[in-house]
Length: 179
Image 1 (cartoon, one colour):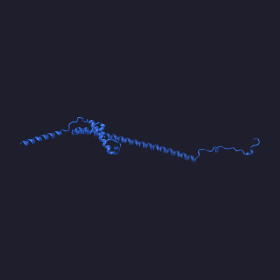
Image 2: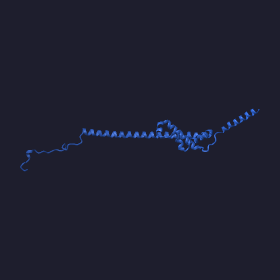
Image 3: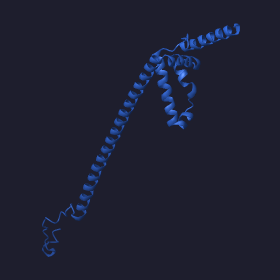
Image 4: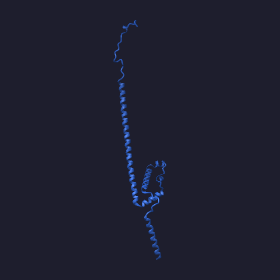
């Protein structure tokens, strides 16, 4: 009978301690606020995507990818882990954070696409302007070549004697003695 009571009390204590864990982690003393947590997660995702897309460039640039976000936001990995665990247990807060992260990433993607479209439009306009300028230059050169060809075929400098009549007196009529 004493053994049964001992087992029953032990089970009640174990169940109570197990259920107490379901209250979630305690709020950390240095909990990262929601706004900063959004910024940290956005930067972490951007760094991860950049590393995936351009791993060689990232390693060549000498960026310490593991600590970049922590250094930028002046936090440490323990602070982030405790804050992340706390928010993960409180699903409404965690969902709010990740919805804001998702909205920000979608907005950044839209801005990036707009910039890329504007850059493509500017590049295309510069190419069209260059083609127009080259076309005008070609037309000018072609017209100059035609003028040169015409000048070779039709002499523009006329002999001054073609229009004038030259009066030549016969030599016999000249009085040499008077000279």
